[in-house]
Image (cartoon, rainbow, N blue to C red; front, side, top):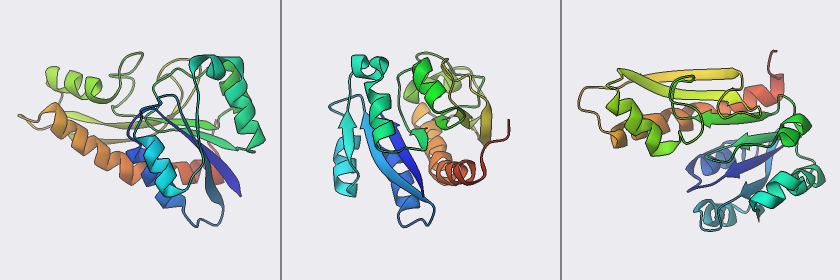
Length: 191
């Protein structure tokens, strides 16, 4: 059984989608949810879903304490699902090619520090883009620069608001992230 830990900073809709996808899976289980925001909606979701959740601060994240929790839980893969902090180099090195993130744009466009959630969708609309989408990528020690594993796009129609772009983006996230995680975990990621 491959054991996943999910990291989130916000409401946790992607976390819930991933947990439900792998519920009862023969080869993959979600063992732990980690959160850096004590007021995040993901905490209530984790409790409702019956998945253990641990809160942490920057010092615990950077000191290696969080990595120790992952090792104690025998975690095989780390999945970022709406997690906003840069992952420390030592954590990336502890899980080589086994940390995935989903970004709400077609990287390399609209990526990097400070580009997340509605900020991305507002920038896409402001630039009059005709398409946007999602990128699932490996995590390295830089924001949104890890190798791309999967991308999917949708048209941005004239008159679409940032909220409409976000809605379309979430549909792709919910549809694609769990099966891409499943394939990566079971088959590995080609280098």
